[in-house]
Length: 416
Image (cartoon, rainbow, N blue to C red):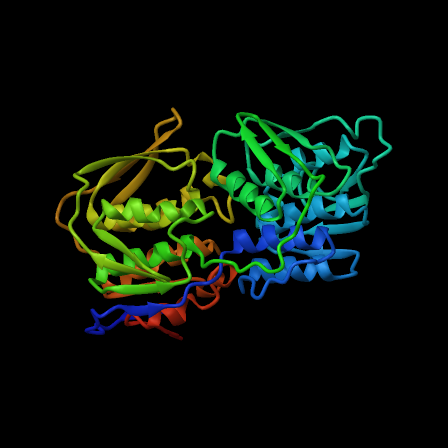
């Protein structure tokens, strides 16, 4: 599939409709389902991940395939163990490479029983029985290793909202993605569930739950990031609605990141506008990305466009996403005379060929990873021949991405 660009001559604030946050949707829907749906949620994310999650939790099936939906699949493991329901959960090859052992181990210590059907520690997994309140260790604090993913801790936080469940969670090794734990905390607080966070320790009071009557989900900040690059690379002013300046989403930091990269964010009432501004970062920058890993593909794509080299910390876990995102990023930026190099000290170095060079062709190799596809698509504004191998992968998080991109002068053309 070829991506073309034609100047729209628009600078008056093209309106982009962002999807609702799938991270918020997953947490709110699971909490609501755990308590038998007392809260009205007018709309959820329409992402494929969220659709799969809601279908699974509402179904009476004994087998469900989550494809590559990592967060929903892990949350579902905790949900069905808490509900004491037998079910087999599976996924595609991408999901089968993502560990669930720490979460399964934590639940097993409360009497749940699982059977790995392929490789130990990975999907597919059968939940034979759920947690048991009569288990000798049931009242002891939860203990979970979150070196690989904060999702394990979030899943336990959500089921801990159930009456009679242990109220303490000891978290080992969580030195990244703390913003997602804080998001889960804010979700619980909306239900009047007090939740305190300290280093390595989470405390939840599940005794006086008061669900709100209704909850509206805000738009997705991580999805806005791709249009920051569109605004920068095309010079267009763009406008969003539904984003919250004081957001529960850690990826709202995109406003600060792009402030130094030449895009200013202006918020007025319910509208957020992007305006191209002056660059304040020089030839080299440093980023600790441990709290916003989902923004890294588009951040690196932007740095390459601006020819800004960088040292980036906290991205080792990108190897365990929908694709190995370190490799996927390198496959694409190498075509743009750049490379992401592992320094083997917890950091990566972004190296860029500073010699004048304008690529005439870019083959976007997505590895079926939605964020890779969206991070490099805006380059069609700069490069005359841009091709993408899997444009449908964006349905995972942003089903209408291409329609919204089209508003900015981009088109997809099938070529035989």
